[in-house]
Length: 310
Image (tube, rainbow, N blue to C red; front, side):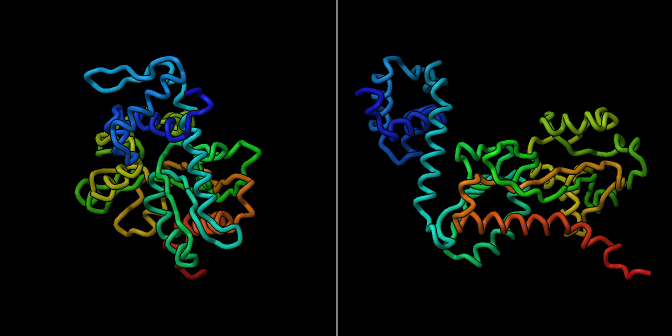
């Protein structure tokens, strides 16, 4: 079999073997038999004239050729999924599948209520939500719409700036009842602090702006914003989270208000070509409105907002 005769099914199996490390794992994930998965890999190896995996006691290890093919296979997978989403829908009505990419914490804490209203209004709309702090490539069709904390640079993308999601130091009221409330930044090291176990790119950017935070150590570390938020809510210590979380939870208290002064620019982004398709446009508009309301929440629910003007 020549390279141009190989079907997408073979590359899909190849990608599954890369991800699972075995023929049996790939077969289970794709709903195939193990012999079928093996034949797909053998056909690829024959077409490319070289082995793609080394058989070891630890499983199938990819060769250099396989690793070089991985990015292209992922692009093919994303394009296949995008074509399936387009085929699932209606070009005249809000019907079909939309894939949304957002960070873990936004996906888990902010979007469910927005998407519930959207699907109540559009019962034929199906949502795929990719919760990841990695930036998925819209130009490569990895998602249809993305919520990003960085300004998009590609000209082929349609974006709407929502505003700034602000963060501050917060703790659960039960923790502060037990350990007291710090009155200045220098007292933070005397408290149990919640933070990252490694410096991600945006953490490094924060430390460039606020070198006074660089020396602060964390007593509880996790590489997930969602896990950190759960730790704050459990009364484990003081950590960084969005003001909107505290605005809707009276048990979360901001510590050292105004000290952190960190804000994340937020954008809703989709490919320019999708803007005239009803389901993508409706989803885009709903996300813009919902996130705009989310960003305004801390001001709307702050004590000063409810006090009458003098």
